[in-house]
Amino acid sequence: MPPTVARPAGDRLRAPYYSATVYTPRHFGVGDDDTASFLPTIEVADLVTVTESGLVATFLPLIFDAGHGSLLGHVARKNDQWKLPAIGEALVIAHGEDAYVSPGWYASKAEHGRVVPTWDYTTAHVYGELRVHDDAAWVEDLVRRLTLRHETGRSAPWSVDDAPEKFREGQFRAIVGIELAIGRVEAKFKLSQNRSQADIDGVVEGLVGDGLPQVAAAVERARPAP
Image 1 (cartoon, rainbow, N blue to C red):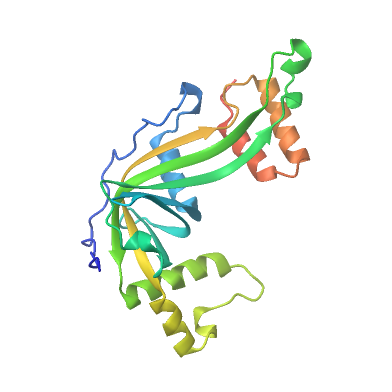
Image 2: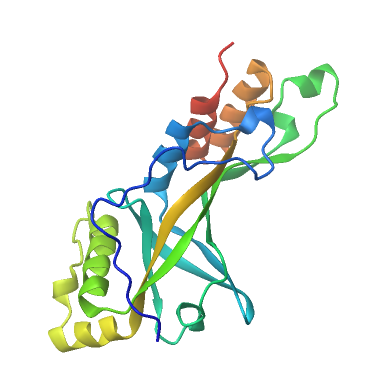
């Protein structure tokens, strides 16, 4: 069983730890500030590891620990991924806002017709050392943090303490904590930055019309200066 490895207090990531080896055209490059602001928004993502058994992946909820520069989560004890030592870095693939973009939204469609469909999105590939925490207290703290994050603001928020103690303890034993100690981040925001101002206007209007105001807001925030 892999041992629990605690990260020393104060062992924080030191800039720069962002890189851009993922295919990223100039228009869609992301600065350090945008990358740093993206990490706390990660809620679920794919954890991918290379092991002696091949590639292993799990889709799981995560929370960003800014104090230690880590992504924290948990997997089912029966999930073999935590038992299989990762070869080299582990990878978390996270996605933010995304949506289909119709070429019919572009003002340039009426001008010359040389337009095609595309997809706008934000994503980050987060690399680092995968650490296992097979520790009930660590797991309970994580579950409480995740629950608080997603229950806050509800009219009748559920609390971990709402469940019977013996039931809670059994559930905690059924999962294992994982920590990705972030080494580098490759982020890409493709939000129509390569289009004209008139085309971006059309994309924003079209996304709102499709009931996607959050994606429209992201496109607006990424709009290049005229």
